[in-house]
Length: 353
Image (tube, rainbow, N blue to C red; front, side):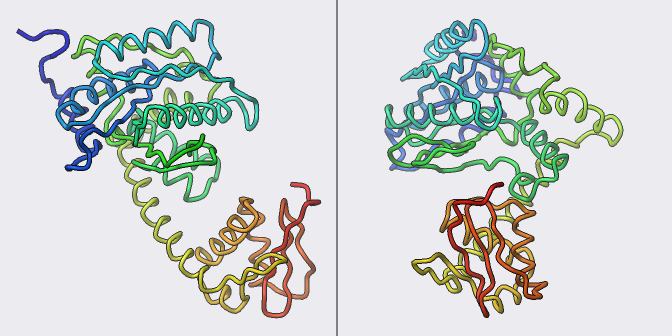
């Protein structure tokens, strides 16, 4: 007889557990490590929590949960408390509830995400966790790629979410925050469909919470989920979500390789002085546009902690490829001018975006 704690092994349960098993720390050094599952109570994170509780004990890994209460919906404290109770019933320990204050910078979604990652980093530091497991699925990846395409985003956006990212201090959008040692943010379910996590919960006798915002079509991501992706599946045939996820993986590989090459080249070319940083025009001109523009963005970001838009990056590149004596460019946070055979980047505290 199967108890509620030990459900019959169905295809959905097996698939989710297999994905979690591959993501858990392994080897002799992993014994005694702690991972936290970011648990909202929804189907994806609840399936992830249950599978992690099952697999972690067999891998000698301690597994806990962190529930972030954003306080943006009525009854959010009750939802958080219920998720914490479910986590404890699954055998996760510790179970941490973090209440956050969401600001307004960058819009409500971005502000909530930033606050969430700071809370996750703080929970990881407090519990000694080396990793936080996030419940993003293949469907989330496909939605991210479609949104990036619609907004004309670059390869960083179209590459979607990475299976694992690491962050320490500094915070930031989707990058973590807080202080202390680096935390790995791991997405074990990026190859698993949302329908599978929902079936996992049914098969396991788990009752997930359904976030009303996930059906609120005021949000672009919800419209992609409920209207655009189903339309593409009907018109183009099944497999669109999987194809978008594969595209993200391929673009991420290419983008990471180009970033690596740009960093190696920048170490050789960049000349850091008291006034700022310079790059030789001849070397920039000899590189293909993808590397040239990465070198420009890398120089500005590393020296002035400013992320140039594509429009601004192309303006700087014209000082290399279309030079006819034009004067300095005053961009947000940085001034760029061509002096002889160099592009000189200096701080600019007066330019407006």
